[in-house]
Structure formats: C-alpha cells, structure tokens
Length: 166
Length: 341
Image (tube, rainbow over all chains, first blue to last red):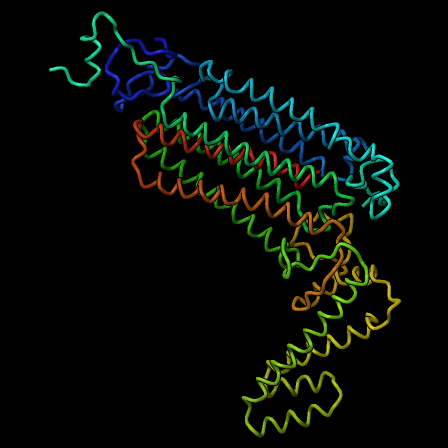
C-alpha cells in the first residue's frame, strides 16, 4: 500500500498515521511493511544494537580525557575524533530513534539543503574565525592591549602534563 | 442541498478534487519537526558562541581547575542515552496497543531524566561551593592576579571582620548582664583554645563568630596582605590551589592540600582563574538552557503518564519522543565541547 500520497480512499476527516493508514485503535502489527518498524517485537533488537553502539562511542570519546591518551594522539586529532564521534552518535539517534530512516523522501528535501547551508556557513567562517589565532595581522598585534602568547599552537589547548607515572 | 463538504467534489462538474497533504505525516509530527528545527537554530547559535569565545580567548581554564568532572559528564551522557532507548521502547509498546508497557517505559524515561537533573544539580553545587558563579557579586573569579585582585581580597577580609563584629554585637545585646560581664572579662584575654571554650560556654554563636574574626585577622597577617610586594599569584594559589594533574576530578575526592576557601567555607575569598569568568558564563548558559529543556520534557512525560497510552495516543508519544531525542542530541554535542575539549 502506497504511503506517500493517499488516493481517494476516503473522506478527508479520517486521521492518518505515519503509514497512511486509518488508525482507530487498530493493532499496527500486521500492517507495516517496513523492516524493523512499528509493532514488531523483533524491531526492538535494532534499538538495542544502536544503544550498544552509542555506549561504545561515548566510551571512545570519554577515553580522550585520560592522560595516557595524549601520549598517542595530539590535541587536534582528539578533537576531530570527538566531533566525528558526536556526529555519528547524532546520526544514529536521528536515523533510528527518531525513525528518520523510515520516513519518506521529504526528509531529503529538508535535510540536504540544510546540510549544504551549514557546511557552506562553516567554510565561510573558517578564514575569519577558525584561522584567527594563526595569522594575527601585524596591526592587530600592534593594537592589542597585551602581547599575544608566544606559542604557535592555540593557547586554549590543554597542556598534556608530563607527570611521573602514578 | 449542496453543503460545503468534501462531497462538493461530486457536484463541481467533472473535476474530482483530491486532498493532498503537504507531507505524508500527521500534522502534529510536522509541527514538532518544525519546532525542532527552530531549536536546532537556537542551540547552534549558543554552541557557535561558545566555540568562538572559547577558541578566541587568550586562555581557558582546564577542566579540573573549575571542578568539571569528565566521568560525571560521561555518566550523564549514558543516562540520557538510556532514556532515549526507553522512550522509543515506550513508543513501540504504544503502537502495539500495550498501554501499560508504554506507561512503564515512559515512567523509566521520566526517572532517568530526573537522574540527569539530579546529577546536574550536584555538579552545579560543586561549582557554587567553590565560588564559581556566572555572575557578580557571587562570583569570586578574577582574571588576573593584579592590584585589583589584591585589594579585593583585603576588602573581603575587612568586610567579614566588620560583619562578624556587628553580628557579635547583636548577640551580645541579648545576653544577660552577668553573661555580658563574663564576655567583657574574656575579651581582655588573648585568644586561645581555652578562651574559645569559655566563649562557647556562654554562647556558642559568639564563640564561632569570634573564632572566625580571629581567623580573618590571622590570615591577614599570614598572607601579608598589607605588604604591597606580596606575590599575588601565590596568594591565589593558597586560596584556590591549582588542581593536581593526577586527580580524577571527581568532586567527592578530597584534595590533599585544600585551599583556604575549602578549609573555611565561609571565607569565600576571591581567587584567580584566567579565563574563568568567560568559562563560567558559557558553561552555565549552555547547560542551564539544556537543563530547562530537560525540565520541559519531564513535564510532558508527567502529562503522558496521566493518559491511557494506547495506539491512538501513539502519535502524541512519538512527538514527545522526537523532542526528547533532540534534547539527548544536544547533550551529545555539549558533552565533548564542554567537558572533553
């Protein structure tokens, strides 16, 4: 049964649920043709897999807070990993928990332009904000109230402490 | 008689009109997605502000310096992930017309959300008890160990001494004449354990106030506040020592060398954390708004739990779930940005 455009199968006033069916307390078991979706008790397994994946990803990003992590990975690498992990977790939640994976094609109409715009925005801000610390102009250095810090790396980076093994 | 109903389509010549909804989802769901898009804009603005301020700041405090604990943040993340799973299981149950199971899972979600808020409150308390507030005059954070800071410390000690003096006078006036005479005698003696015990025998409050006043005077001398050449960075370190790199940052772990503010919780002397005020502003703003959204979600869960969550209510439950997943999403981004970067 097509779920995209309702054909003239009834008066307008009937409420429709996400599958274009009429929902009058009907058991949704037998009606869905989408894998792992409404009503199937086996569909729960997918949610559990996603939950485990989310837990593992959280643990991975949490590992970056330990001292021994910084002996193997630089600060920039850690941050990129953390953002990648966050985006993956967000994608998992959106696709599976918010059921966007099973939505119709309108999801592409809304998300793809939004993604394009956000990527464009990020790229546009990189020269002004992202590279601000590396290439402070001479005039800015002259006008600054205090001399800028000497180190080449961004001053906000946490210093991995070289402490004795504890 | 032709009425303005959908039956018109049969009367309007040979044109058969069809109802085409804009999107093949219920109206409520459409609206919730639109609302979520505005919330995305809202949090994107806040997070963008944090990123720009953070990476443009000359310095930024380390996590342990401001009593941020990564394990607690990770635990909160785990709690919210679990609550996302439970709300989706509630939705599955509602769709299968299992109303009691759905209500059970909604209750689980509500409880997990409350745990999140409880942990957040604990974290906030850990900050406030160390004088880390996002606003003056509560905030004791100074950016630089300069003359202004030095005079603030001196001023605080003077204020405390004057305040305790006034409070002692008020208490004194309520004593009997005999007690007043005893106090008069004690005041002539130098301060010691015995005199403190003697004060306590008459009035424990006066003893406490006297002891605190004495501590202030002792500290003034010990910290050499009247000496203009005193090292103010050292002073701040004594009041609020820099964190030991080896600690896990868990708030219940007592430090080996507690600072003055921790030894005497009533002291609340100013201290220096470079970048601390900007950190406090952004941290409390981001987590505060997120916590407000969590509270709103919890209110909706309470409303849901008063209803019969059968298949007809699955739409409402789904929409609430969408909002709750969004709240989880925001925290998924906030956790590394605030705790791990």
